[in-house]
Length: 326
Image (cartoon, rainbow, N blue to C red; front, side, top):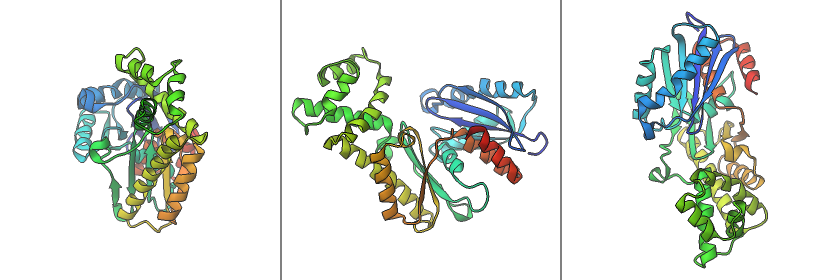
């Protein structure tokens, strides 16, 4: 890795940020974790400010002064090229590294699931709080989606599924929708009796809004019990995951190729059987060569692997780096 033999790897998500300092031989020299990275809410500069104490911490812990050779940053909310450019400029201006490379954080999941030798082509779908897909093909081709929510045509992710479960449950209770066990399971989870009580608690914020995320695993549990409404939501989520992967593979000319389809994020990493089985079946129908694999290693591993790629690291460095997280 050039003059210092060190690089910074950054994975910044909506809820947490990980920074690692890695050496050219794959050794992890330091790590730090901080809060969420939300440029749309606070602005580019203040968002990057979240990285500053983490970078200082890992550099100081390793006794490193001055810029490192490279910084690979995979960032949530870097959804558009103009956002990547603005974040690259802001991070480069901090003087942490001689070279800065910024991409959307879905590419970190992808890199973590791709081989360290040979052809690095494939597609990743992340289904965590939100949903996104990215892929790399031959000759530097890429496929990606804006991932701006319903505005850009997205469907799914944990937060979305929680809201859909609430919607279905509320309508079931008041007669506008089909009956579903969600109407009793969701309020009962919070010690309430009816959906009307849960709706009021969320609306008046006597129940903090962030607790909605607790409803996503509950949706899958109700679906596993055979509930038709909950099962329909899970089936739709599987359709969207397979659709994203299939479209990306098609764009890259890889629809029939034996390439990895890397699956990650909290919803997929939970390995819910109904979701897993349907995604696998749909992928087999639409992309027969696809090799689905769930990656549960932290996405900062993908950022660190990217740093090694850019440094031209020796093969043994990759195994050492993966061992540190896997």
